[in-house]
Length: 267
Image 1 (cartoon, helix red, strand yellow):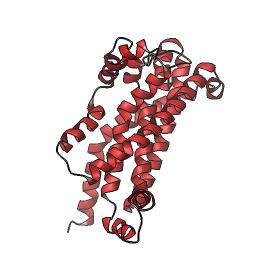
Image 2 (image 1 turned 180 degrees about the vertical axis):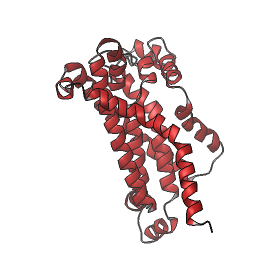
Image 3 (image 1 turned 180 degrees about the horizontal axis):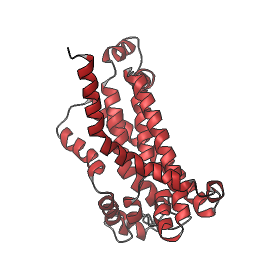
Image 4 (image 1 turned 30 degrees about the vertical axis):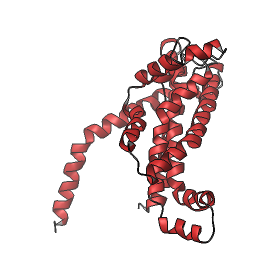
């Protein structure tokens, strides 16, 4: 066993070696906070472009998260509990948006659902317009963020004790009741954590949204898009929205880490 002196030296060495990256990650956030201190954030917060961007962001991200939970839960359960040919390929397709450049995702959605797209052209004939509308914002967010929920939910379903489900089934519970009263409650930390991560990823989405939905104030302009426009036109608005997103990011990390600690008893 290493002596206390050797352990202390090891800690100091690792701390010094880690310092450059830690400072690189920390200082930009501190710089943003210091710069924001020079503005009247409350007055800027009440400006119409900021209010509109916040409202659109929360409306679209909540819709995207709700759709993810609705349609992603069956997918997660399928991946967690069933074995079938092509399962690895399906998992690869689900993981793909997590590594695909967002701009590529936006272009792909535009090619599929744009006014002259593969499916969009037929929808246009029916009077249905998706691209460059609030619906496009939701779909872009859904595309890039839903894998976070599916992966987390699948891990949660895998971790459920099958014997508890079997006991409930033996007592006469239907498969749906077993799923609703046993499986979901036991997997709830992973489901909730995945939903929070999905919402946060959707809230920060930029590339796919601007490609597929455009950047129209009061219509499709979410907070990241407003930051992009504010950087060129009104830097104070960009800083205000950046501070809001930074605070939300810290809150999301706090919530997810708290959920994981309770789920896995992490000290």
